[in-house]
Each structure stands twice: as C-alpha cells, then as structure tokens.
Length: 402
Ligand SMILES: Cc1ncc(COP(=O)(O)O)c(C=O)c1O
Image (cartoon, rainbow, N blue to C red):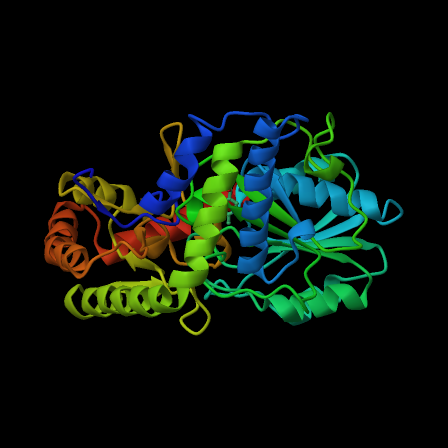
C-alpha cells in the first residue's frame, strides 16, 4: 500500500481488490476478442454482458440501456452530440457554469459552430435556480445537460425537477453523474433522465472505462463509428478487463453503498466540524442541505490553497485545491468563481473527498496537522485582511477593464 492519506477520492479512487481479482483473468487467460465467433471469444462476450447487467442494476436501468465507453469524458461528449443529432431542427443547449470542462469545452465548440448555449448561474452555495432554467427553456432547446453533483463542492442539483422542466419543452436531458454514481442511490426506471454518464475510476474500478446510459427508445446516434460493438452504438474493441472491473465495482457499490454513505458522512462531518471549530477564518463552500456525503470544500481565508496542499503533501496527505494552476498563473476555480466567492476564499479553498477506505485515523491525522499548517502560512502571509479587500477590488477593476 502506498504510504499516504488519500483524501482526494473525487479525483480518482483506489481500485477495490475484489475488482482487481475479477479483472485480472481478462488480461491473462481470457484474452479472446468478444466479437469472435469461437467459444473462447464468446466467454469474454459473456463477461461483458454480466458487467452490463451489474452496471444496469446499480442504476435501476435495463442492461440494453448501458453502453460501455472509455471514460466519463467520452460519455459526456457522446451524449451531448447524440442529443443534438436527435433533434436537428433545434439549436439551443442549456447547461450550467459549473460543469466539468469535458462538458463546458464541448459546449464552447458547439457555440462556435452556431449553437446557442445558455450557461445557468449558481448561487453562493453552488445551487442553480429552477426559475432561471425555466426562463431559458424554449421550443428551440434541444438539450439540457447538467451534472448530478459537483466534483469540487459536492453540491447536488435538483435533478428530477430539472428533468421535468426539460421534458415540458421537449428537450433531451443528459446528466453527468460521474461524481454521483456509487455515492448516492440512483433509480433511472421512472426518471426524466434520457442520458447519464458515469466513470469507472471514480467508483473503485480502473481508469479507462466508463458507461453511458441511453434510455430505451431514445434516438441515439453513435459518436465513434466502426465495427458493431455495443450493438453498433460505440465502435472499437472493448476494454474487456476495464469493463469486467466496472461490473464488479458496480456490484460492490450496490452492496456497500448504504453503510458507506453513513460512514463517509460521519467522517466528513467530523473533519468539517473540527476544522471550523479549531481554525479561525474558514468556511464551507457548497450546499450543506444537498451535498455528496463524501465531499467537503473549505475556504481558508488569506492564504493560497496551493500552499496548503503542498504543506499537506509533506505530511503525506493528498487533497485537492479548487484552483488549477495553469502556466504559472494562479487561475481560481471556475466553480468557486461562479459561486461568487470573495477573493479571500476563492484562492484558499481545499477539497477533501473521502471513500469507503478512509479511516478514523486518517481523519484524525489530517485534523492534527492542518491547524499548524494554516497558522504557519498565515504568519508568513504578507497580507492583512485590509490588503486582501483592496486586492479584490483591484482584481475586479482589472477584469472589468480588460
Ligand atoms: C463531474 C465530472 N465529469 C466528468 C469527469 C471526467 O471523467 P473521466 O476522468 O472519466 O474522463 C470528471 C472527472 O473528474 C468529473 O468530475
């Protein structure tokens, strides 16, 4: 086992040992091509079918509604383009400002190709406004695409209400549930969701495998063209070991989720409560009433998130900052920016994300070292809160004048 305290499970998760055991034979003995006519290939095809049934069971879907892909990114790209192809006479897409880049960047490209895209805003808790959605919907809306739960804050959107509004305008509804599958129970049977994305490596399966739920009867146009794999809906020889691993992971989630949700929420709440009680000038970013049980995003005022991360890393603690450090310039997270967080919190926010492997000891250790790290960084910080307020107003001027 690597010697680290892993509190970055929204980035990726540890493959479950049972998953690894289940998939290994498909890298060694059972290497046949599932499309082959012979029995050897047929055995592999059967394993794929069993995995499909497990994934469908986790989602409350039918096996025929599951298409295996290479990742969440591919599923999202496929879903968006398929939904637009299903209603070619419609020209508008509605999404939110806080989506993952693999949705936002597709939407930006579609905008350049002539589609109208509405990016719904979110409030300070990262929650969207259903009235804003309703006002944006028209008879020209081809697709509403939103995430189920935000990867940075864990905020959960009111999915069924969004779906009902989308349906009332005849729009397709796609949900990026990469952060939700395995963390909250889902039942797609009577849901308004047409298309739903999931990713293996977020639920203790390996990287390089994902799935797309496509509701029976939805007019689906494939993204990858070629052979007849996935019943002609996703060409390319299957990542058999990955798919078998995803099937096993789905089976385990179904079994473990009820206890895992309770345990992770308890650990997360304790982490959060003790941080808020022992470290001054910090606050939780996200919607406390509608949030993933494993995620907390905490803003530590007056210091840089990256500095906290590097200090945590020295203690072997893995977490994540809301900001992506791009080419030397510290660019704050688009999610926290869309939430309208003040400058002081925007740059000092850290996400801790737990899994069923997170232990009491790991949480205790994080709580032991964090106050000292924050204090030391604040002592080193040249800024007072007045300086920060001034910097914030300067930043706003610069942004306005740019
Ligand atoms: C909300 C969300 N959507 C999509 C993705 C992309 O998934 P993948 O890494 O499988 O491409 C991620 C990954 O972090 C995510 O958090």
